[in-house]
Image (cartoon, rainbow, N blue to C red):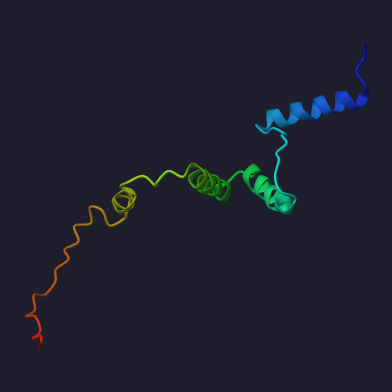
Length: 100
């Protein structure tokens, strides 16, 4: 039994999507969220740092897990000033008098 042209076209379309690492799927949601979900899906389908950042943000918010500890320390260690032997001094001053 031969396939109809519509089924062959759909199969070819899904194969092309698969080669690009993409898949077509259906989700259920509120009608009011339709455009939000579509725009989110379009942004996630893009390649680049914006899509990566958005994906990480959505994953973090959905997972509900607290952020990893040590993020500030890791950022400071990546600073261009690491190893610059920058001496930071602060003058010692006498405290002010407090009237009670």
